Length: 507
Ligand SMILES: [Zn+2]
Image 1 (tube, protein in one colour):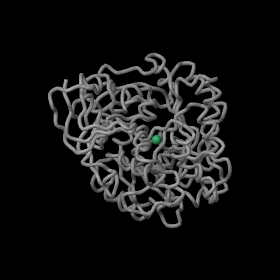
Image 2 (cartoon, rainbow, N blue to C red; image 1 turned 135 degrees about the horizontal axis):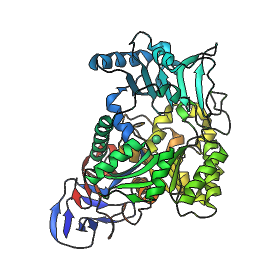
Image 3 (spheres, rainbow, N blue to C red; image 1 turned 30 degrees about the horizontal axis):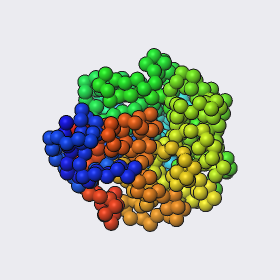
Image 4 (cartoon, rainbow, N blue to C red; image 1 turned 90 degrees about the vertical axis):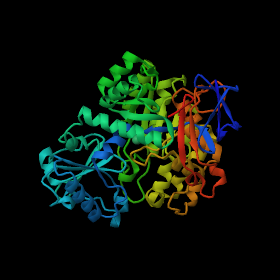
């Protein structure tokens, strides 16, 4: 038995204290040996409810194109990377975003001409589009006669030839000609990603769209006692994943007790930034209505299968059409049985009528507050003021009683729960840009925002009686901070993570 001292402890449910009793790793009302923790303020261990561990780690072997403001800057960074990595056989890059380029034009293969003879594959920031060079186009054999696969789009020039941009389900046409990651690479990437998460102050993550290669490595790390935080997995939709889920079952736990198997991830549509989000009406700046990756029957069939086998589905849905289809599929699959708590990942744009429907379905809105602040500069021009009333709508979800869990979608956004907390609370960003009124209208109060990263995140993985609150019986998981964000002028940006505690032990 011990008593944790040092910070001022607080959770999203009004529990505040100057000390915390701890017995066998659980919060306990007791007094005992005094352990002094660093920091001045502590909250229940923060949980990122949607990220991609392998993708985060993979970033270390790719050209980082985040923040590039022009094609010239992209070329410059690739040139530098090639100089630094002369033996690399292929060039992978990540996080370009053409909304930052002049005229917001989608780039093409010729923009990468003359850099190298090696294949170049560059993933867009949202992961829903890739930009490749002529060498990889030639290798892939894609030509004017190649048809767009269902749920995918090959961008073409006037003669019908591929320009070098592939959206969603069309991406594998070129991706399959890039080498697969090796076991050693996956190992190194996961080590890196887990370390980043722990240092960001996270004590748990929901790893979404997990490839099996990554799952097996996480299983190995858990067995060795080397997971620095709790990991809840939603596997990639592949035949082998279904087999693993059926074999091990819902909430299967690794031998180390920190790895958990929860369900499977689907994609209903693409992403907003590449006009791939499936919308009920056309975009304001594009006559298209986005991409449907799974139609209504396919969604219903898959979620019903999850329901029957007894594990959670986690469906990516960004556009209002994709969200409506997903909510209806969940309701159809559940037949009134809400116990599994199916999830909608992003739940980014909803028609105003659909909030009520979502609330009735009992499904979880797994949302990323930083997407709101990141999309703020262009969202109004793309989808218009009216649709923004139901977009990034944390407060509307709250008012309707929809359970929410918050995350970052790293590596799409940096893994930084404090930035997410600030975005949900005030829509402010670190660089001090003035928040748009349409976004501040969606803001939550301090405790509601905190709940999204603590008790709400725990509810989404059926652990609301185990972590996310500072009450007797709960896991003594804590994020330790340098100060109280409510007392700082810069809010969460004015404080720092100084450590984490997992099961009563400092990590
Ligand atoms: Zn994601």
